[in-house]
Image 1: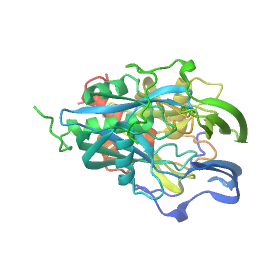
Image 2: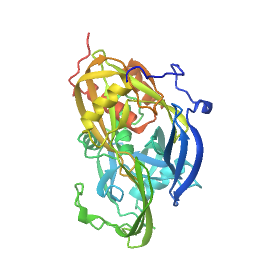
Image 3: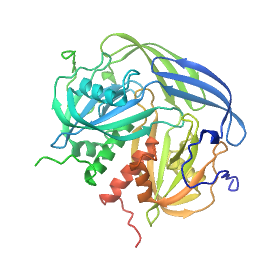
Image 4: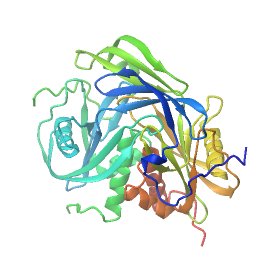
Length: 206
Length: 206
């Protein structure tokens, strides 16, 4: 069990060359598709040269998350019932980018629709792959500042609650495990890091 | 567009009561299943009372992530080709918990298999839902310390590289967008927060 380790391509830097893919796809067929996801079943040869299967979930829309941050370091959380989890979840404003819009346009739209907020500035802070053992789902996160409050207009399927709280309280909710949505957890932790390290040019109003 | 906001259940705290689920399932059928995931298609009535569909991905195994942390504040990253993304990815040690083991047992096994590390202490630090618009996938993360290095033994399908680097360098990789795996991003940011706030009882050896 201890001697089977194989490091066939020793390198110290990340690899991105597609020809280094150690998987071979023998057969692929789409087993499910709807407007949001496509599920493919693959027959493969795995990195060790053995036959196997691999089911993947392709996401048709990039996930967008926004951390709105007021001059007083307040933020806004969105509460909604998450159907796949069968539970209620408090999160940062999030949504999927439409095919006709850029990620930044989607961030502006989602923030306005879910919270009514307009922002003078959107600062891109991170990209994540949410579940890379199975899916290609990507999330992009922005901090929105220079905020003006207006009326919200959620999508027809959404039944949302909104709350405005101190950013420090949102961070406490992450640390206490009260926020578990991965985009929200990572986005709020990264925003906290940027604020505490002085990397974010949003000074708290005094 | 601005008057359609509906807040039917105003509350200030998270809701967890399952009877508050605003979705009605009219019909459900499983469209794909393999040893790791099950995909279900639902015909639903959405929170606004309109008919729709919902495809969900159920994960059969809880994802486990481990941040190994030496007395000198070094950590270990695992590099592997991620089939669904068609790209190489550097991450914290991760894996799926078997049905026969507890999450902690899985954390111990995955850490040993992927890195060869044995740890005296495992500290649970977070739970996340990785992609709650579509899936029920859950991740649990531990910090492992009191480490002893031994031989590794990855699973047969894995073709891994391991590198031991200062924790500060791993955090830099997150901040620079060189690590994008959501579990790794959130786990490393949370560990950094715990270290900088003094909440983690792992003092750096001097």
